[in-house]
Length: 319
Image 1 (cartoon, one colour):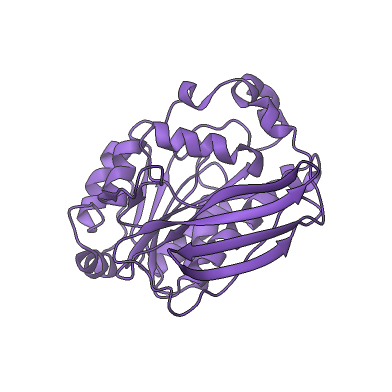
Image 2 (tube, one colour):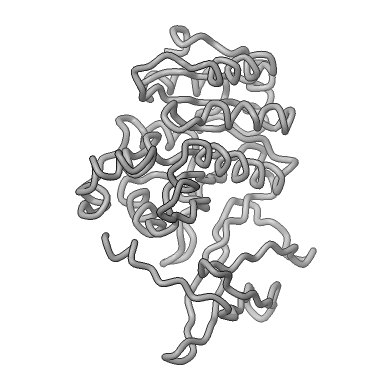
């Protein structure tokens, strides 16, 4: 685990990205790594690359050259179904797993063993999360051997955790039968920008906006908790993308009342008439999930019709 934080960034490496189906090459492009070692691809696919009938993971290939010679790795790209009406954007830390590595250096120091020593198989999910997320995701479609399973409803994850633990979080979700989806994590540094409270919110605001902007015709259910400013981030999405947020689920993990920013955020969500669940037990949230048509037994059309007319219940009635 500790080795994942011992990364060495290399700037200026040319990386080739290839996406092909059989003999048809849909994409063949190149990018260059930045000073943090990341290569960013934001590209429009050929019009012939139609979306699949069921949500699926497409396989791509990345190639680069280093001192040891030519290198190659597989990449997975989520392709939402052409008929997808509802997708999920979920937080990770304290929503499905207690990470212990967000909220400042004090939390990192307190949970150092969990951060650097425990393997994914030794960590525990938030109680009830696998069942709750199973209902949110709907039936899962399995691709050929070796490929990632895809849920009926596309999943996206947004977290303030560092990119260094990407593979760790992926393994954790697979072990615990949680839906797999693209993760938008953060680049960490030992500075105020990384550990400052405002940086968490800014990262989530931008990440959520980028997903909603990429899929303007799709509606989203947002899932988070009350430890990292998720409610204000979700309210901003409601305000900036009217009609695109279908429902919000917020797990109450902190034993504190909402602060003024969170109270304002709640009011924005209520005014927009977006269904909101506030609770500390996912098993109770399942009833709310069914009441607004987001349990997997409902089809997409029923989901849209139900959530568009649902009212936001109080914390008590959401149980």
